[in-house]
Image (cartoon, rainbow, N blue to C red; front, side, top):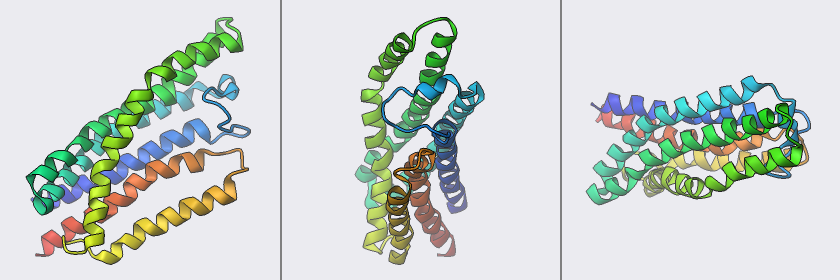
Length: 221
């Protein structure tokens, strides 16, 4: 049984990697920078990037759902049923993350690109995209809250050091946070900002490493 949940935790890591790849496909492009929500360079970027990002988001969301289930079982086992019920919201967070990647990583840029191809001006295409963007405010907020809730609970279990996750494991997460900060300082003026955009998604996978260690400890015991 523990092996099953450990494998699910591995799937959480895979889901985060897919989200990261989806971010790279959209934002890792020469000259592109996040000055605004609408990127004029979308017009010249190949469509396969947007379609690939959408698939990464859809599959990543499905795969990460299994990671969320693994987190739910660990939290329920160690912190009780009420905490487990709260952490179960992470499953909905994974679904919303996949949806957000589909809209922001595919539907939004493809709308812009196709509108220009049909003769719309850049301003008209941008206004069309902003309508999609306005619909995503609430789902984005919910995604962040629900997706990160169980992950921070796993970090809490790590810091406490008495739930089967060695306390020193926190250095994995802390080290990654320092790496993100260093990348931001080094690459903040670099136009290929996909590396930074993917860092947030990959942080989710970093936390699932703690969960893999937890389930490995369970197997030993």
